[in-house]
Image (cartoon, rainbow, N blue to C red; front, side):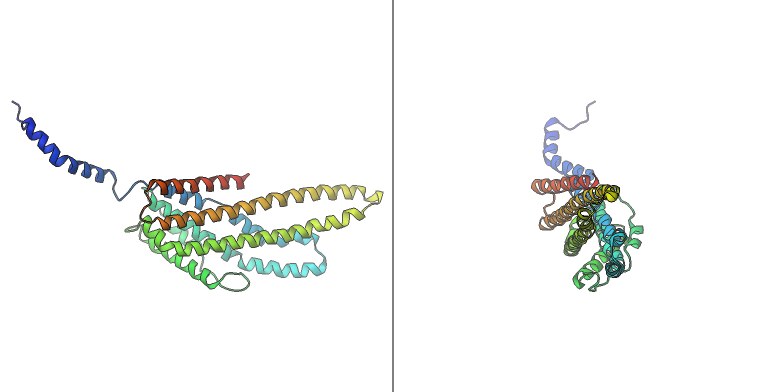
Length: 291
């Protein structure tokens, strides 16, 4: 025997409760909030993996090791003093990058469905920066580093509970922008130091080779020319890497700024398209730096 309600009642029930059922099913399909933040996650991942800055920081620190064989005794004394200053600030310069990488990794976690334990990386941030003339770091940059590490400690230590991408971007953007500005300025300092190194080393060959005209110097001159070409090629490649690193850091700053400007509209098609473009650009820059 058919015990179902008459067809007209079934139609009426469908009209009344169908929309409610669809809403309930939609809520069940998306536990924990929106699921359309893939572009935010991709941008954050690409930002965290950009690379270049750490390598260029290390090269800046090790400038003296490359210059030393070419220096006169008088120039060597000054170079050793510069070497001590560079090594004294290296850890601070790297700590800035570590804090921003961890921020982007945390942002990626918040934008995704999975949960990862990033607490061990908090221990790697160091004990804070020092504002002084030697490092070139200003008090506002030191304060930004302190603010960002506090935010990361609070979010990560709480296992990301009651946190969202919107909250993270809102609370972190000002400090993120200041620290990215510091990294951009430091990368320019690295490029300037590299330019001075290039002039020091290649300049010796430019001066000495034209005056080495004796037949007995022929082999030495040949070897010197080969070495000169090798170093010249090295510096040309490095010039490109500095430029790519600056482009990448600028892209990260602009992308994060766009997220802050569209904080409550991150799922809009135009915002998702914009963030996806930034993410692709960062991946392309990372690949170019790896060549």
